[in-house]
Image 1: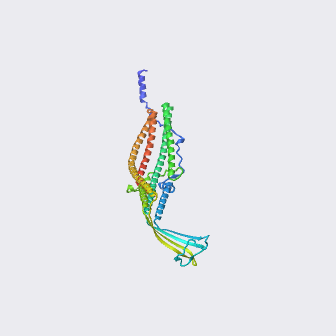
Image 2 (image 1 turned 45 degrees about the horizontal axis):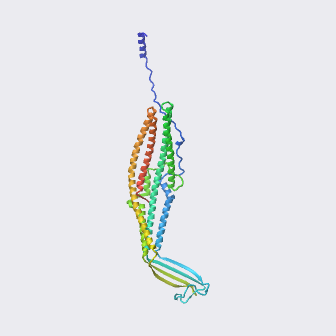
Length: 458
């Protein structure tokens, strides 16, 4: 080509306007569509509770333990009334009609007395009416028995109050556990969905030649682990529902409605229970203390068996007479002094036995005090521990989420490995599940700290 021709071509090229450049759209990220039967949620329980008041009402109406404790109070009241009866007057009346078959003309068991005023008992059938009255004047053992029965009654009432506290605590724990199991099951399904999406992404990458068979196997293994976690979580949810049903007095599973306000559970429990001003007044300690008092008075009652007793008795008798309807034949009054002499060692054995019972009750009270002290200390400390665990779990979840997003982006552009993808996904699932459980543990810790130092009078 000659020089003029080359210059002409260069001029034409320079003078020709350049075609406008069209912007290239960014690549659309691959969005896998995942469908799996295991992603369907667990069927709802046939019965649901939606409020704390509803759950507490069911416990009041259907708890067998509560009915048994109320029956224990009734028994204690009955024993106290029996002990009181030995100190109150005892009156009896009886009527009889008798006939002597061998001596039909003789009045049976009736002897003439001046009170008959010359009248004779009727024959061949004689009717008698007798009344007796007895009153204990001095009986130390009976008074000790009454004191022991009174202490037992106080202990039964305190045990009922402690049972109400424990039922409230157990119900709150079961509700929190059920809601936590519902949330864990939901998180497990999200984790399975994410694992299936990673599997679809890796399969597409393998089809395009950007990954190998090992990548596919690793991701499918992660899917299998996610399925196992989902199955285990669903079973935990079913067991939590069954435990809630038992706590509410049913023989079937009971679920928690989605409208249940778990955040207001603390305020709801404060309406049913009141905090204690002094830890020694906690119902279980009061019950143990009353039991020790009852054992001490019972031992004193046995020791009082060596002392004499003094009582007063009065008897009135009337018979049918002829010619009038009847007359009082006798009326007597007597003071009875009873002095124990020898019972073959029975009284000594009884005293020794009740001394052992008293020592057992004292040791039980001391053990209860120690247990309550440690329980309260642990409950107070558990709030701080739960708050710290929630904070660390939240930070771990944020880091796991960032790591998973960056790892997934790196794998999409071909810079990351399938091993990193699987590990980041598993770490994210675990971090989300841990955070949810830590949050529920914080709610439970606050409830425990309150109810360990409260009295429930519902």
